[in-house]
Image 1 (cartoon, protein in one colour):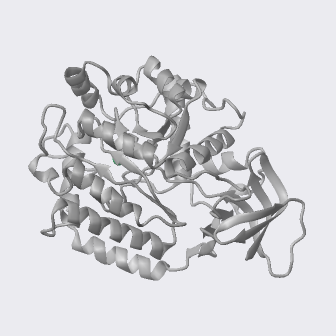
Image 2 (tube, rainbow, N blue to C red):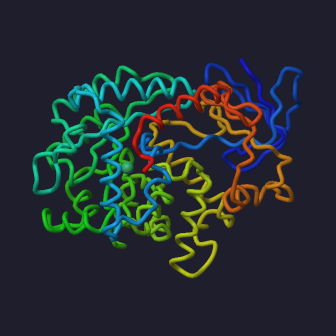
Length: 423
Ligand SMILES: [Zn+2]
């Protein structure tokens, strides 16, 4: 059992002073406010709950910064970027294994990496079975990861065995264009039967909207809502291209929109109708997606900045709280928990002990009281003043350094050297 004594802690109803957290077996088992520290307590400055990264293609980090040069043909877009990403994916796994064996090997590697770094993981096996709405077979370069529904469900069953205190297993379908109506319905049924989050990319690109209109006679989100039982379990990634009626209907379903603002900006996707979606009661989470940024506060910053640029106004996303930082943080904390399949989240009894300790004497936070502290973190750039991180009850970052940083950096550098992204 460990005790963490925070001079400030962000509880569900706001900041509190002198908070003593009792951590046992990876969970917060007690919270005392206006407490006194004991000699053995870990003394912390400001403590906030860790956020869930609700959408991550981890391997794409290797592409960050390598696709920002105009190609000879010009007209660079999401689709030209995707060709580079497929090239990388082929290099990450150039073995002669079948797609299903590759998925199993990738699962083991991801679980091992999460265990080594100590991060909580929600693994989302995702079916990719066809090249497009009217193309029932995968393209040649998609055979690395495409599989049949039966193979996919067998992989999901094996993945479920990896579930533990720190590993959750969700399920998903890649997108409406990559999965048939029948397969999507079956995966949704499995998600419901297992009470698992159900993830799906949707309406990220205008081309996908046009193709969906041509094939199904509906816009993607509209078609999904009319044809599947979309509930709070569903996590719709991007959902960038919605009209106002779709956004209101999606909000009403209770599904989480998983927004990845830095990636969506990097890929030229478009702008999610955030203000309208939130006004209609919509839920959101954030993801680092392609990992061009790995800073959650940068994602929050761009969520708000996109709205400011589009509406030529300021402090747009402040519906429940007058402070934008508080509004965004509280919303994505809740939405991220849903996307990751966690029932309790935040600094509350019974929640996972996932804590971020901020240095309270850092210049970024100087002069900020309880009202604007989260605004400072969202809008003041970075580096973030992260002093310690606890995941699943274990300290993984101490004195601003990951406890296993040297090994992780060396392995990462070695891996990157073997890839051909540097060109
Ligand atoms: Zn994605």
